[in-house]
Length: 145
Image (cartoon, rainbow, N blue to C red; front, side, top):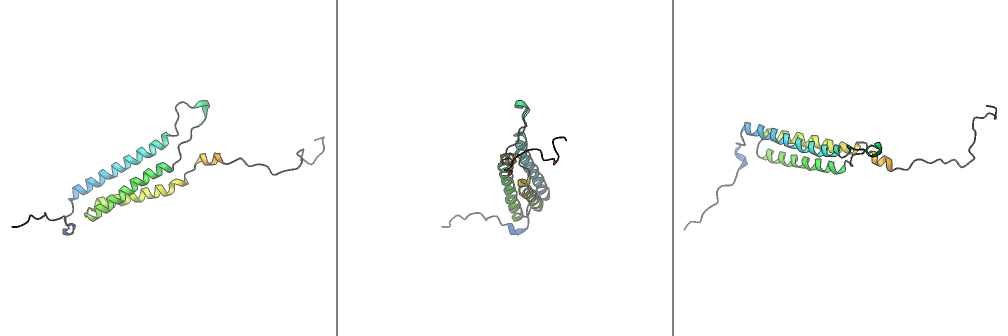
């Protein structure tokens, strides 16, 4: 009596990979999908500082950028994983495209904290004078000036 055997496992060493058209189409699709997600993430951040009915004419500051950079980093991590899977599957266009996207997201996340955060500037106390003496006219002249 012979036992049933499992079908052969996928072997990526045969060099076949996926077709060139499918590789390029998938690379473009992933690029557009990640771009759309990043557009939504940073669009929500920009809209957090928009007020259609400003109370008393005061400017509304956007939310801190930190949480939005974490979301962008998650998209970058997805790009790194997709590039690794594509590299293993010999899909050159997907691997290069996702590697480029991951590098661009990493640069944006790295440079994001350099964006001027006006809320932190407002929290600092105003500088105070250290002068302890009498305040008066310091022009050096007399009262006939």
